[in-house]
Image (tube, rainbow, N blue to C red; front, side, top):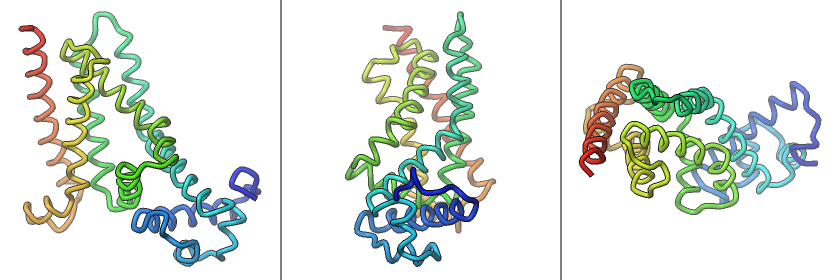
Length: 227
């Protein structure tokens, strides 16, 4: 029986959530070399529960990808809807678009400086380096739409074409500034003398990244106007 046919009960839902949480930790640390025995033990479940609720280890891996896509989508759907509304407006409201970019930045920084999203980041990082069908699902469901919305906003704010490869690269570079605080977590903690991230430190990171976004948007807009 797989995840789509197993009965949905409060107890069953709890077991599935516990297994996915444990699987994210194990897969994030060891990839597909993680064992179902260790996943079940971490979840406090019988190993047979994996077969019952998901079917196989590969199915559980894909269930983790679906969970990640849903988790991120839920948090950024309001941004996507707001972006679509702004992008339809004529003339474009550049100030509102910049404000939405800053809001998205705050959201991403908050997401990536939380300890409880570390396993999610490890899972995606592994998939970025050695992609499987799991990454394709995450990409199609949430990363590509988010990347596209940010690219379109940046294009509108700077007068560039959204489909231009350089605009896509600029968007990716800006996202990379935020991702550096997750992927380079230990470096910045040691360099800044921090023991960890909290709300105050996340706000400082957001402030720095948003100042960089301002410089880059202003620079790209000037360059485009002079072309």
